[in-house]
Length: 551
Image 1 (cartoon, rainbow, N blue to C red):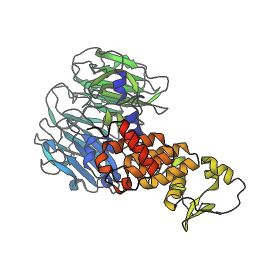
Image 2: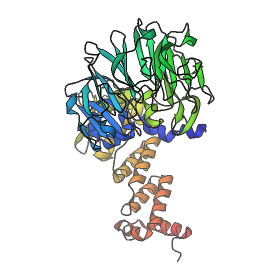
Image 3: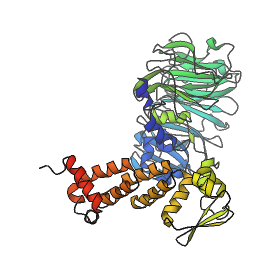
Image 4: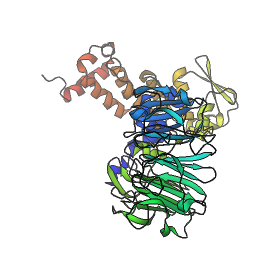
């Protein structure tokens, strides 16, 4: 089980880790839906939300403050005025000039967003009045929700499967939509097609955070208390019972504990305390409570994640997955992971909780509005890469084939044993090089700055010669990899010859096997006709031993 999970999250999933770790900290390309976008489009993304029953819809904003949508457009949830699906990003012109502060989505799906100015817009599925516009007609374009909110500044939004909550700047909660279990907190089970303030126990409280499960609602107040209402069949309200709650009720079991944030899965709940501790309750059939078993819990239960304090919790109503991030930057996940059940917090190789939902959750959605911040910080490696062949900072020039290559003495001495001795007492600013070609020597110097090479297989042969001469074993391996990747019938004999010349035994064996497997074509090439006599004799002898000439 642990080995299988490592394919998605763990330390032994080396091939996956090698791919993912090379990506930037938050890479929207990890969500499958973004494979429909071009590289140019991905580079422009500033915010994004992936939603829908299969993670097949997306809304994103660009660095130019334009809003685009893409996907299957179920119930008109793309807001384009129609129900046509689209493989190409289409601009959502009706929200032109609006900047998104927060956004949430339901299962229909329906979308609710708040702008940076505190206005609320909604569109999509509306069979239960979850758009808050007074109707039960699907909303094909975004509409401004003003009833009871016209003088309010909304700072947070949350959607359950078919109901919606918003939080205002003055700490009030408004709800609307499907209410079969009391999830809009009105005291009845009648659906509510317009926003109404949630009162009862919250009447004189200042709410600082809201969240929705599939059919339940949560609010954290400024004193650290948690209030819950709605469906409770799996104990997701944390009240020690399974009875539904039509009005807000305080989670008494958290008495004396100050909660900062709440996050809801499909039918489970997570809270984060001011001491960095996580408690969970509700449905647990996938291990989403992180308790080590699959038994539902109707009371808050501590989730044990090493000694480091937790600073972020993550869940969303369309999945059975939980995630958390520690102060030290470690990201844990538990619950459903690609169909598997993970009942204890599992340390992943991810750098943010968003990646857990992109790579582990079903469907691959986002648990919050993603924000892709431009990162101007350069690592040491990136800084060195940038300085290669830079005449402005270089203190050494190599003259090769009449062209200059600019370098830095101290870096060459640090990176290469040959230069450590040859440059030790060398006061010259220019070094002439005639033993190797310009492309080969430039590739060698660039390797010292970047740890990588980019050459044709034929030029890599020249670099293999240089790597052998300078005893750069790692570079020698890189050259052999490049040659293997670029071998074809036409150059196979030349590459075999080079492998023999530079005593690259692994490469020699690889080239020989390639020649045997493509013997008919290889023996008709000019390279074979011009083959060195001794090499030809050895080749025929070896080919005979492996049965290449048997009928």
